[in-house]
Length: 271
Image 1 (cartoon, rainbow, N blue to C red):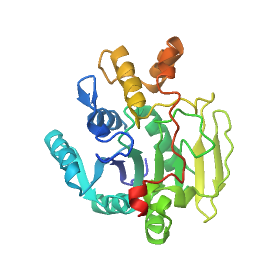
Image 2 (image 1 turned 180 degrees about the vertical axis):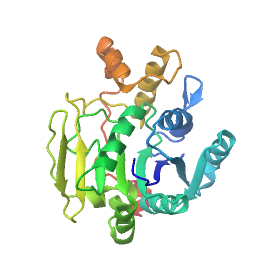
Image 3 (image 1 turned 90 degrees about the horizontal axis):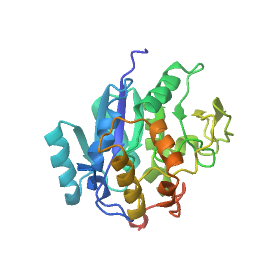
Image 4 (image 1 turned 120 degrees about the vertical axis):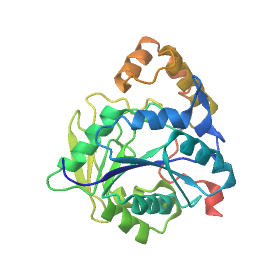
């Protein structure tokens, strides 16, 4: 499409504050990290995928798992996730970075490809293309994909000083942009630091649906979803949408969980 090397960086660590060890939690007989990676690897636009974890001893287990399954792994800073992501991008020779978190085992490869192709085809070129932003989400939480240039990531790495910028990786780029959801269309804008931002929107608003794993309730929801598909992982996000509409009680499992905001940070990093 463009000759640019597209590298996906999947951040993962065992030290979750609300659900420690969640990335290796069992989902229908398979660790959640593997569920997420295998779905992500089906995206046709991705040239390489790296699991970016920390140098903490607790994350040795992730290292062992990734090497056993042939996944590329990078180990870096525990709390400065922006630094970890940047250094993984440098090591992989990325021109374009796709960022995910490992607690999203319903990640959809077709939606990933749509987001990446939107980025690659953008005219004028974009610095960052996403399918969600704080306050303007139409896709379920857990399908998030962020795509940026290496140059934009490097600028954030050099200049971002706030703790939440370092922990959440991309806010330095999109902070201050105001994009309103437009049904089924692309909205564009300029962030307060001059980055060109574009966001994909779905025809219908499913932004309140919670399909990520941060609590025991989230994990139970995910296990129930996979059970409905007999432990397979070749279903699409639209199949899950149909499932939860057919069985609305599934949504109730974790509907009370409060989603973290842009400025919520791990207090261990703030000390």
